[in-house]
Image (cartoon, rainbow, N blue to C red; front, side, top):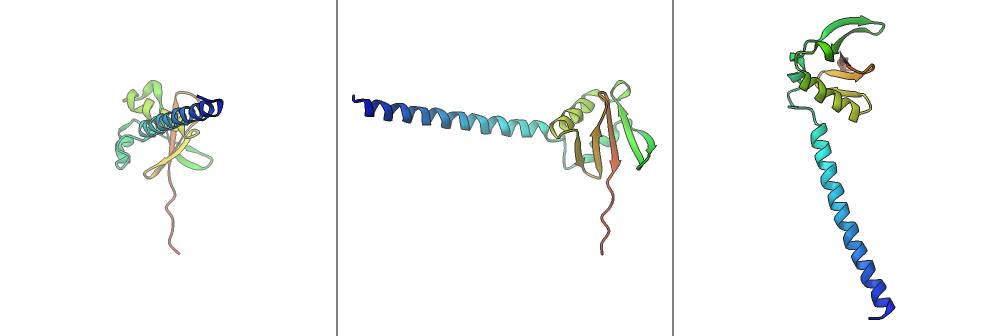
Length: 116
């Protein structure tokens, strides 16, 4: 086998390896997206069952959830993970959620769009 044939064969093998890695990357990305999807995303009211504390701030009323006082820590952790994957801000259903200090999640009802 000549040097050109060996180089071509090596190139083909590297291309096949690259394609295998690309397939694995796509599978991992799909799985991570699945994990980041809120449970029952079509039923965002799943988060309403958490024991939110109503507060008022400079921008008006909002709700706060403390991990150390949460009635469903598994759901808290899941929502917290979703927020971390989305740079600590996400809108789900009628609410916008965000985090600040570790162990706290906040939400505020989204403003309704008025028709003109």
